[in-house]
Amino acid sequence: MEKNNVILKANSIFVSYGVVKALVDVSFEAREGSIISIIGPNNAGKSTLVGAILGINKVSAGKIFYKGENITNFPTEKIVFSGICLIPERRCLIPSMTVMENLQLGAYHHTKNFKDNLEIVFKYFPRIKERIRQLSGTLSGGEQQMVAIARGLMSEPKVMMFDEPSLGLSPIIVEDVFNIIVDLNKSGKTILLSEQNAHKALSISQWCYVIERGSVVLSGSSKDLINNKKVQHAYLGGGLDN
Image (cartoon, rainbow, N blue to C red; front, top):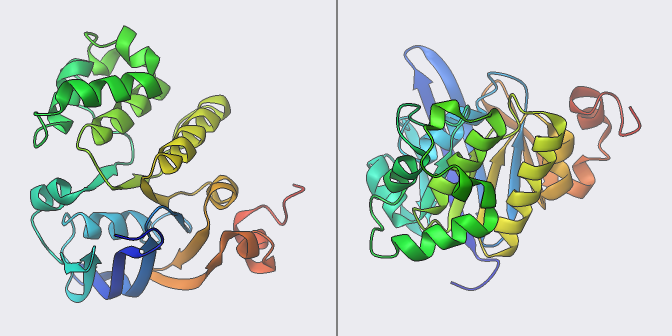
């Protein structure tokens, strides 16, 4: 696939939880090698969208394409194997398992390259090597986020989706996490970033979609949206100087 080709795309998708419409006519696209951010308030549909892409949330109408193939409502296992991973909100590690065991779960479909991928993880996260036999539930929030990202890397993804990666972390750790996301993108990963911290998301992404009440209400280059009066008022505290 040529650089900058569309690698992930949604066409007018709908997702419902019973009678509640969680996503309504949502479309987006992510070009290979880009960072795409999705911002919006709590319960806007951001997590529902990344869950739908991964096959966790059932799409009732519309289609999702990955590298030109329709993957709508495919089994999650098949989608992960194809090259898409999710770093979920609140990390979702198994606390009673060691760091190594959590990484082994991430490598379930890619055991052949396990050692090589583990070395890649250690380069990004030297601290993980020090904690490799520690129970993941005993780690700090920042360390758990590192393990969650590392677990995703062990699946050899081409597209990495991050759902609220800054949630519950200190400002210093948030800065570290976003620097890692940028580094992963520079290494060739396409990033889909669902994030409440609009300023941070816009500062590292090339394109952004704003979701409210389950619908895309605004989209454009991150550079343009960071200067958009509506976005500044709703998500940036009235402006970048605040």
